[in-house]
Length: 244
Image (cartoon, rainbow, N blue to C red):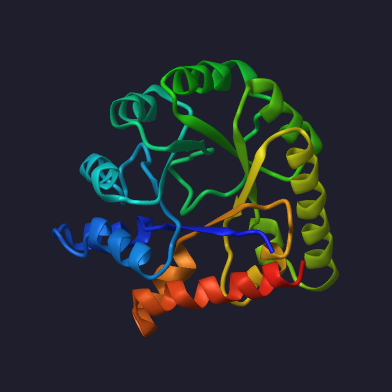
């Protein structure tokens, strides 16, 4: 049974802080608590509108995260300047619209090759591993390969939102996409909308090496505490991986 990494996204700890304009709760403290509870890494999304994570958070997390540090950002100069200054372990390029509550879909890597190539090349030249957040679509996976990405993160939102036969179809698409990406030499992560209730089947996809999960863990932590929420997610993932 291969190890499946859990990277916890602490954005919504910052959301709670920004709601009142206070200094607490601190996403840096949350990140440390997540690592103590068994998280393999920490993810944050520095959005252009700075609605939750701030540049201070990005800088301090670089100094304290012991596992893998993953910075999500849009493919623009705003995030690129910060990424090149901070140098996280890897950067995940995601689509971003100010009107959305959260990331609504995968990046159109196939349709935005020129814009993405500039950012991917700059990050890789700086020694930063690059991941593209995309749908489990052949054209998008092939585009990630041609752009020189090191990794993809498969968008699991359609799977998480579906029920019955539609969920089974979405899961099958994730399996096919993960296998295609792995066979092409990409590392494979997955995330979006995953909860303790639905993560098991995704964790069972052998080609997936990493899950990025945030909202569900922070939401569970409101009720049961952050450490217990991380441990519960880790347990569900282990059950899924044991089925492979």
